[in-house]
Image (cartoon, rainbow, N blue to C red; front, side):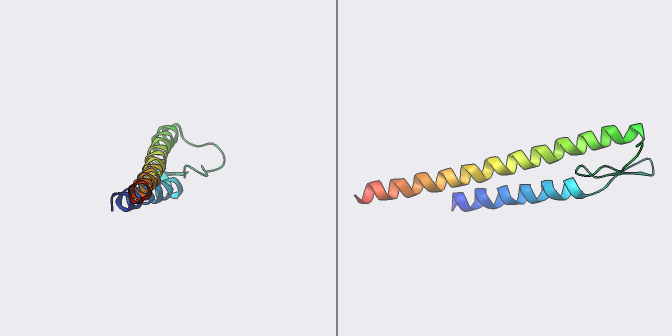
Length: 88
């Protein structure tokens, strides 16, 4: 049960990170683009801070989601191994 919950929360964090990555950023009425594809040409200076903070959020959600998924797989593997060792 724990591994399923950890895995589900991990996937949810990855999805939230992906949504934040593709969602456009606006600063002062100007469109800055998204983390994955900033707008072409000269972007206003206020976009730099917004895109940087959005990139940090995306990185945090992605790393947290990946860590939870790895933890869920490890918990499932350890539980499976304990079950096999106890039955032997």
